[in-house]
Length: 372
Image (cartoon, rainbow, N blue to C red; front, side, top):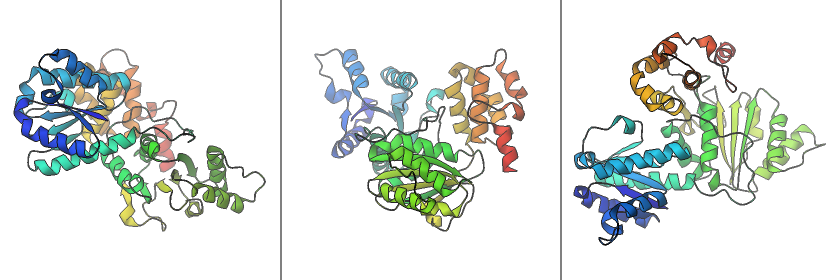
């Protein structure tokens, strides 16, 4: 994968080391000092480099902040993100400099104190990105659930799941309050890294019998369990899951009996649940999903609303998110509803009530009532 290194030539020493580390890990870095011949059109070659790159790393410093070339490069990367709905830009903070508002929501790697450690972090992050966009293996069934829309932030959870379930076979638990986004994170994780598995399965367990969840999985992986007794059907599906490297997301677990369905290696299993302890998952392999940070809430609004509107009405939007403790499901639904509003956005945000937070997917007040 090609990685475009957008930077000031004043930062060439650090960028050279970063390029060497990326090359050693199988990436192809693009640097203007190396890839642009003086006899060639500078603008043409930069446009070509940006178009061919799978990712842009912006090396941020006071010199980069002042560079018009660097600004054009990161603006082009952001435009591509919006057009393709795929992350294409990351930032490495080499030396302190004010960050433009459009770049604040982006993932940052801090190289201001330990540049060598930062290079290692960047290479690891790029490796995760490469795995995320890896082609799905031939013959692998497409997930039956849709990729979540309006997804923002949650990088710490996705990175942890990657290390626990992609880099090795494992079992992990995401737990948290209703509406915290456990299911959405699990689904996003499945869509992002299914290319590293032979197949990927997502099933909502809830309070259903385990045999019903097994039937759902059987349909996804093409296993016939018709006519089998419930216990036999569960055992058959589990055995089938263990035949290939499979990512299994068992969502909204309520019953300990679901353990009978969870396969062993070479499969990896993610459980999501409101319950923070399950006897079949060690506490070291569990993580609580918490509400959005303020930055994550702002990123959601920027996905659903025009950037100029978010800049103009930022205080009212963040006040709206804080009203519901930045509960992810509430923020996402509110952002979608506000996109359809006419008139003053401040007034619409302040007037939006909990009972109105419903869309085709989520019923927030209903979820709160069931939780209580």
